[in-house]
Length: 316
Ligand code: AKB
Image (cartoon, rainbow, N blue to C red; front, side, top):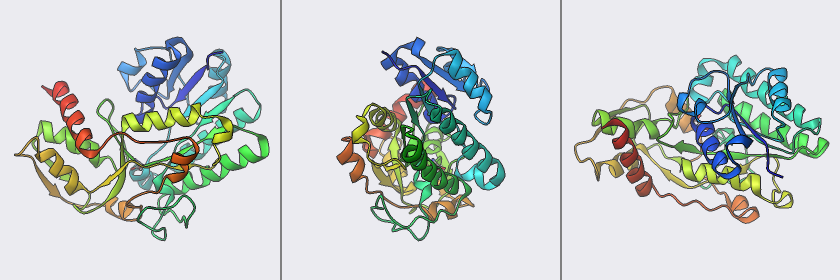
């Protein structure tokens, strides 16, 4: 039998592209997109859509019952930079939504749950290079705290109640269809837009700030791969380290300049620099590569070519 899927937070950067991919695989009628508002009209108009408030248990339950949902992808979250401006709201949204979905899954009405974690679970005391799966984790952002605590709860619900919850620690995600919002890695998307529209980008991180990054196609593939993996192959039930490439703002600017020689970047670090400084530079994701055969495909050069091609079509 086909899965009946609900994506909560489907209008966001990852949620929207995940929705399109899941619809291609499982068929439009089996994939229900939902969000708190209609903020992404192309997504809202492209298939079944429901208003669901991720902080309201009955709103989620009603939608699950109405559409016979057996799988939830919980993509609603407040990210690192916005979370520092609204710490309590970040805590409430990120934790309440997770508890609601885990509690619903505990009643056995769901077969599987996907919940994204992040490299933000790591902190300044974590080894920065090739950060291992199991290591010191002292996140310094509210977002990172919610993700680390969330991971503990995912593992707890799996061990205690048999909830089949699967999770990935996403790095920064680069995409052209939907803009990210409120993250520290957002610069790596904005820079491509500004390269096309202004030939100038004012970067909020220093030029040598190296962070783990990934193209959206790889992120969506990893998400669908872990959800399709055999239950016995998903051995980590907190969240898997996941990696593709690592680069600095200077690296990405240079890769753009190969295609737009007049492109210039100014560097004016703000409060997001401290957040970036607390995160790893690169990630060891060997458990994901071993357990469910994860493999990334996109290099920085290929990402730049694709981003500039797609955004040129959009703006010109
Ligand atoms: C953020 O920058 O907050 C996110 C993340 C790395 O989880 N993109």
